[in-house]
Length: 321
Image 1 (cartoon, rainbow, N blue to C red):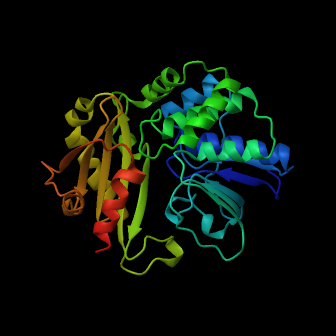
Image 2 (image 1 turned 60 degrees about the vertical axis):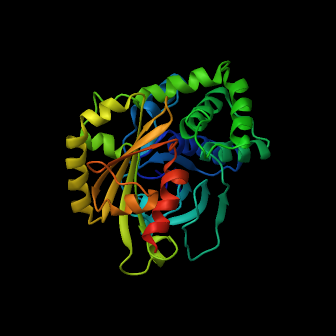
């Protein structure tokens, strides 16, 4: 790659929203702003994302093993622990995200963040505002990303803006039945049969730290409580429950290796709308956050669909007390 190449990249353990947003935004910056961009990922694609890219005949993004010395545009994340390896010595020129802001940088940069259900919604909004003609395949992957991150509009993070943009993209992409298409997407990684315990945990896994306000790693006070939260979507919780010993054993290995206080894994039932929380390490935080005693380290919460909105806020509040 040329020395002045700009890598548009999402978070570790890439999901459909982070990958598709990176691809679409790299295309926008290249064609609209004449920037030499490359869409990149810093992890393996999950079955759902592979399905989406194959469906719309989009080339898989480049894999960036280290961001050291590179120029980056970050999409779908802004927290230091979720950035690509080597990001500490990279130049960041822009952020496009829909998560809470936990970001510090020594220079002024473009920072776009809105409380939407998907970064793909914000990406599409930027493209539309820039009077950029979104091609059918790009509209398709952005639509798929919105449907994935909002769990086909069922997640509490979903907004009216997500639905509005999804409908516009569906027209361009030629998708007539949005919800049917969304369910087809979600089914791609809803079975755990072919996945190892490590793959189940890492399919959508992020690490966090809390002590006082939750902040980016550069500003974190010493002694902050570090923890991990993963999420896997299923159509039947019995699969996850049948493998809980294997899953929790692997969670404990990861917890010990990363020096975390605990790990929580949300097994989210996308049909019946609820999540079973598996824990490794100190499960008392989960108990205090939700006022329920986990049975054998597990806790089922009806209506819990979103890590960002349903699980993290009460958990972080408990950790910060």
